[in-house]
Image (cartoon, rainbow, N blue to C red; front, top):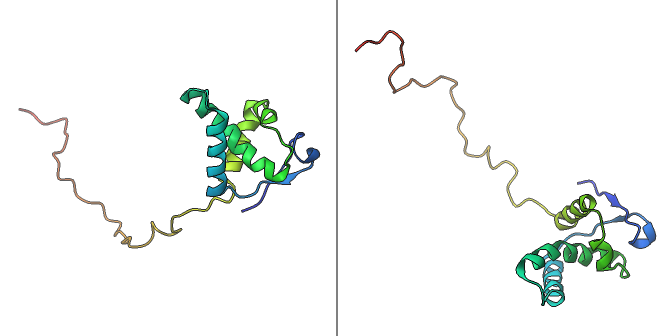
Length: 125
């Protein structure tokens, strides 16, 4: 998979960077920080904050001076793109690539006969 360089003016002095893999350890750390930082919020607001904490957890590994508030102030479109890039970084499929091919019998190409009644215009009662 091709790595994409990202650039944010508030990260790494505006220099391009690669997003490191998202790991379960980073995920747990982001959840812990979310819980600590949103104690006075209801569940709806905590859910809205989740994306900021996930992005921040990755960006501070690139630039320790990155601030959560800078992420909150991003435009919605790049924010959503960045969240997807961070959350999927290093993601690999767990499925075997040819699972649909294995055990599949080749069909003969013949059409099966219908077992239902035919619909005809000339049938009379």
